[in-house]
Image 1 (cartoon, helix red, strand yellow):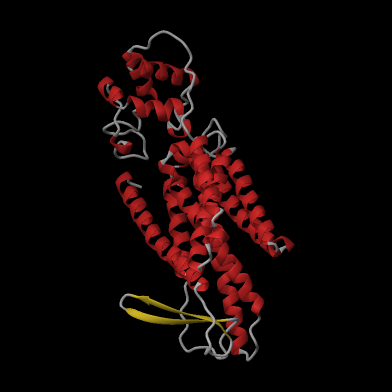
Image 2 (cartoon, helix red, strand yellow):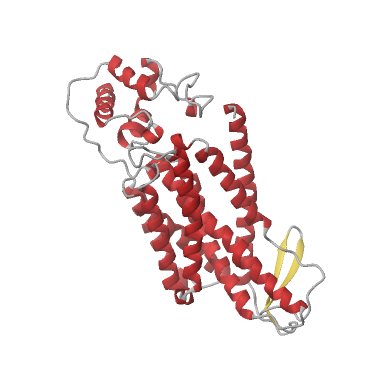
Length: 394
């Protein structure tokens, strides 16, 4: 595919992913808030759990929620499904366009595991599928009856997957797959559990039977899981723009802190919507802050002990750049994945190399995030040489 058209396809998929994702997240946030604002009133229809008066857009709304289902199926029933389905579909489309088509660039790091593109793609698809079935299995066992135990089990599942991904993919590829795994679990919750359970209840009503409450309870459990995973998965999906996250040698710890802080922040917002007193959830704020501070601390740039040696002349630094960098960072990149230099950074001349010396140091010497996937095989000696050259400019 032409690189320019490929970039447009990437952009349009990313735009669509954002649009439908906002719709899905918005409904998740709204219905959780709606549940928390339900109140008992003196006059309520038979079978109603609670009601909520709301005002928005210049009008008033009166919403009722039934304990299980209304006595009679309404003529018009509004479903909220396609936001979730399209969010996953556009996200997987991005995974294909960005990571599968350019697997050698973004997904594979020969220093981690020398894979063929088809092998990396097969591992990706298999792991996302296996992750869902393991999660679903946990929810269906006795573990699923204990909220705290299930939360710990799901956390362990995601962290184990993170460790395995870092043993197979590049740092960038590993982190995006953690987000893809969580997103797949969330979407599959809607597709395979929440909606089917609602359809079972409707079928029972049509058959003149009393709907089973357990179907609604299971659907509610999965909906709550999705709600608490929303904030962490959002950060995972933008992690590709921040190499200090995915290049960390203990990236599973970074993932754990993101999950903890994001989940706690979501918990705070939920309890605020529920009208709880600060005494009931106040502990979550310092806990979330500590998790974020810990994430900042562990990802802080570490002083890299550049091997001692003689001063590095400009020509030697440029030679390393010509060997490892300019295939992408040139006015006319030779790399098939790029039509223009990433972030408009060109490293073809000594003045250009000096201009971007610090970004080169951070991404190449400190984070080791570049070259992407280390396709050109940059050695530690070459990284040290670049480090000494940059240090000589100070």
